[in-house]
Amino acid sequence: MSEAAGADGRAIEFVCRACLASGYLGGINKLTSCLQCGSPRIVAHEELFSLTIAHLDCDAFYASVEKRDNPDLHDKPVIVGGGSRGVVAAACYIARQYGIRSAMPSWQAKRACPELIIIKPRMAHYSAVGSAVREAMSSLTPLVEPLSIDEAFLDLSGTNQLHRKCPAEALAALQQTILKDVGITVSVGLAANKSLAKIASDQDKPDGFYVIGAQEAPAWLADKPVNILFGMGKTSTARLAAENIQTCGQLLAAPEYLLKQHLGRDAGRITALARGEDRRPVTPHRAAKSISSETTFSHDISDKDELIAIADTLILTVSRRLKQKDLYGGRITLKLKQTDHRILTRSAPLSPPTDKAHRILDEVITLLSGEVGPRKFYRLLGVGVDALQPAGGAGLLDLMDEGAQKQDSLEQALDQLYDKHGDAAIISGRRFAQGYVKPTKK
Ligand SMILES: [Mg+2]
Image (tube, rainbow, N blue to C red):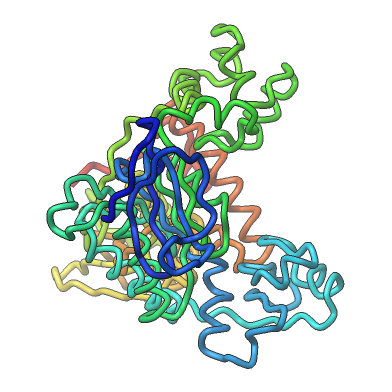
């Protein structure tokens, strides 16, 4: 770091994202270009060198990967999405100028921009590129918490010694490395906690670097809409809007009982986030390899519907565990123990990867159908998912057709009921018909 006189004691700290020069200057309150190389790609902030929590998010990820792989697409409007019934999974920044957004039906996007290029998704490929980005992140700190295929939180506290750079400098260098080695841009949000870092990364896209300091956070948030806060979904936002609470500032001014009434248990947490406070640590996922559940029957079973009902219950457990750990499974395995104790396993890919019970069940029913018959008796059934990956990416869900998406929404609503009343509260119709409630735990 170079030094400059701090005339009024309040020095502005800066990093140049072009030449990576850094330092601090006193007596000014704004710096618009690098004093060393003249680039406008300057990040300047009073707290720049002391902030340690970052959120990194790849820009228009799937579309950026396609453009990287095919330079002819560089200046063209591109989306990645499904065929006639499909929706937009990712839109490049040129396509966005036509009002095209994720989750919009592809036909609507095409109507908005007739020259739009629609590319079929290559999930396995994006997943490999996502891993390369994550590997680059891990070179800065072991504390990387992936949120989805293309974004993660990083905790860089205590890494100054290791890199001989403060987090802001290390992150500016990382953006350059990812662009050079992987060929795509990422946007960085740097702040004092996860909530602010995630909000920050979204402020200056694409190829952004945005800083929200701890001191300025409450004032910065005051006029921002409440749905900027983690956990504020459409329903809660609408309920607060009906009470004339639209901004974080208005939320903080609202009476506690009113917030409790509309946000329930989350009221305290959301209020803290509106003040810019968030104590959640950055927690790297423990590397679970697979998640499974199985049960041994009290009598040998041959009936297909009965086996499906049992599988349904086990899948519920597996799906709940995936959701709790924020993971998607990429492959399902069905395990059956025959009466002679021989074990039979059948696997199928889950494409796209999922945490949804109804989708896992569909695959299991297909696998099971090949193994049932009048003389085929079983004494144990198990289901397991592996090829686990961080959950998320609305893009992934958007690749499915409308019917599957509707079922996903239904399952989400059921999950909220489970959360409230416990697993025993709801028995799916199929299990109810079988008089089957819960298998003995193994
Ligand atoms: Mg992204």
